[in-house]
Length: 321
Length: 237
Image (cartoon, rainbow over all chains, first blue to last red; front, side, top):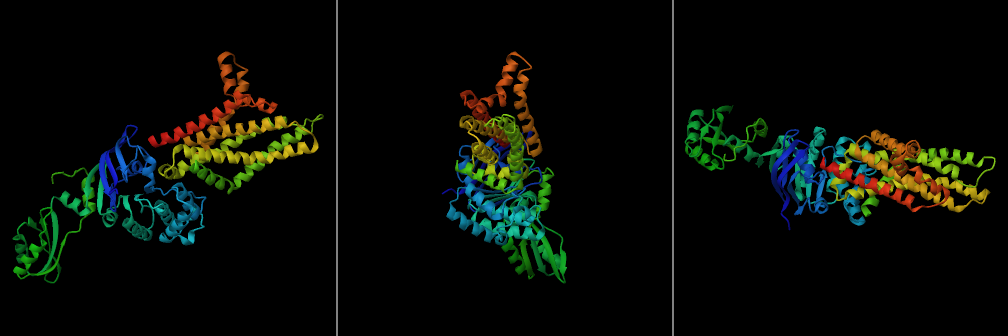
């Protein structure tokens, strides 16, 4: 039983003299949904194309479900379902014929092919389009068919390159739902340049910039690490000054931001605390002791957008932070 | 091989699902029929297809670029090549699959011309040998032209560029035997050596010479090999 589904070590890819990906290493464990985040040209697609066996790396190794992609390429490729960014499909085939063709390419036997086709048509809401020509499908349905083709042979690893790009907002919501469902049964690596998408779909993100891995971890963690601290939002009913002082007195609190009035007598504060600390209980006790009514307490939601800009502006993550 | 046949079947279905297959077949039959009619309408008509076989090869070098140009170029342009190359398929399986489809299409356009043979047997007693070897030669000629077309199709994502390149190359290989008469020495021998028609005439005369058969088979194998290399190099780009 292999737990490490994708293992990338020192992946480097040159196109001629152009360095597209440089020394990228990461791993994705069974059942994880990981986002590959980066701006256009950051090396996401190149990384995915190497992972799926479309292109060999200039150097570095890739293992898919324990199979080395260079030495045992066919076996490695059997374990992958891939949705390329452009969702390429044969426009002169029907939906069912496309599924049949790629199922056979993946050596599925006739009986399991029939049941698998019915399963994915149903799962991706394509039943009514079974006999429709692919060339006549709308973008949203092409996307569904692309996903259906990727999962048809029940691969352990799904590699989805920008799965929600170029479809309309309603379809984006549907596509995300589909991906979330797929994430329950598969190991998923998806690329996106939308931060919101990465933080809603992925347990972990890998940020690439100019072909270099600049950050890796839970979206919140990355943000905190970059900010060098964690932020806690406290909403309390009581005099602003007294609440501020009480918060500042909690052991571990670094600073307390200015109070903002959110409703009559209720103020919000942003408290900064060291990384990997959890001051929430201490804050509750301090508020109770001071007789202040605590209304809300949460770690600040991460503004990944800001983090991303910070990284891509060249302020690289400090590994010791 | 199962995978190659799978790909071939997909192409054959797609080809016969389009009007192109029938238009090309009809055009081929009309063109060669013209030569058959003029061949048997001579004052002293000959009960053979000698007058038809050579024009048929001209028709085939027109057919081959048209039939083959989209096979790999379109896959590249649509991006579906990415699906094929990331599926558990070997590069040579993709190439052989496409080539098998071309061979099936070739048989599809040659087969209707057997009606000429039927007519010959109906009205006269032709010599079966040259008819048989002529068709063998025609099949090899067409397969060779198709292999070259498949190779040029692998080089670009543009079908038209692929088709024109194949047509020019085939025209050169056809006219090489004429050109070999204009020069002397090594150049002449080389031109005659690579010429397609120079290796075909013996088939029409009713003789299967080993060197001619080897020429066509080597030609086909070489271009299928080059196509596979071209697909592989695509991965490295």
